[in-house]
Amino acid sequence: MVARSSEVRRSAVQDSASPGAGGRRRRGAGRIAGLGLGAAALLLSLTGCDVGKAFGGFGWPQGGITPESHRMYDLWIASCIAALAVGVFVWGLIFWCVVRYRKRGNELPVQTRYNLPMEFLYTIAPILVVSVLFYYTAVVQTDVVKESKNPDVTVEVVAFKWNWQFNYRDGQGRDANTVASVLGTSEVIPVLVLPSGRSIRFEETSRDVIHSFWVPELLFKRDVMPGNVRNTFEVSSIDQEGAFVGRCAELCGSYHAFMNFELRVVSPEKYEQFLAAKKAGKSTQEALGAIGEPEYATETKPFDTRRDVNNFNPSDATAGAGS
Image (tube, rainbow, N blue to C red; front, side, top):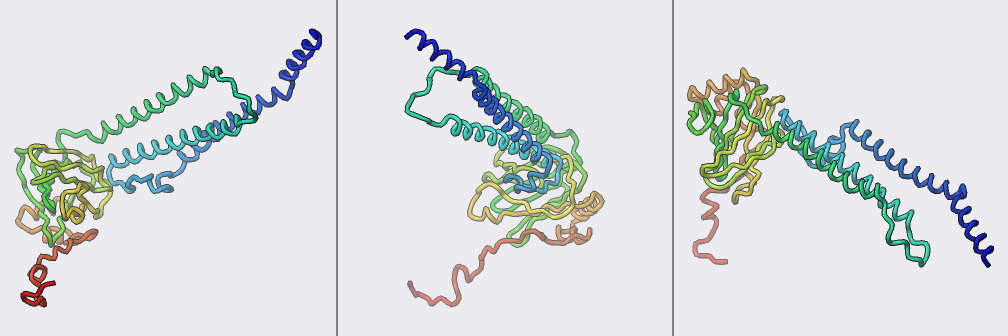
């Protein structure tokens, strides 16, 4: 009886130490190593190409025209790539565990095992990922919201229901003077003319409710607050000339969707000529024509207010007729 049980124990030990068991362990380690190498290869391949363009910017507006917009775009794309890499790795481990440790009988597995390295990994790894993302986010945010003491151009953005007024100022703050102004109407889209290659500060205020100043290619949106709140931000330069649509990005009332304006970026020489023409008393359209630019907005058009006599008292309506 004793000899037989001893033989059984010896044979079990021999089986567990057989080359097949070692091969299985090596194959398991090989799968994990292959998964890690595959995730690393995927990350390198994604970072080596224009991932943002291939995937539509992952929802972020493309074609930025300021250094600040490029920095935010790069941070967004890098964060998406990191999230995809972590997601692929985690999902790979989940599916591997589902296949490797699937149920093979009615015997309940041991419930008291633990893997100290694995527990250490899934505790420390998320902290490292969040710390890295927090660091780069703080660096980019600090750079984006930075303002200089003497920007080249200062523009006061005044929002109201449902249009815009742009005041060119001779300094910063409430005490500065307006030297020229562009006012939008229901019939004419306001055109904000700015120079390329110059630092520009925007000082925003509202006459009624909360609006939001947003040019997708310029920078992220900034809320325009009523009262004593004066929201400011600055771009170090605009790197591309052309016409770009600006919008109100805050639901502000019935005609919110039609509260558009146009940003017209021109050379510094044309900008100085435009500003001189405005100071001389010319209208915005006359000043735009004087520098060889289209006199009206080209990227958006006014909405139809339908505010005419026929809208309120149709001429073909029969007096006293009811429906």
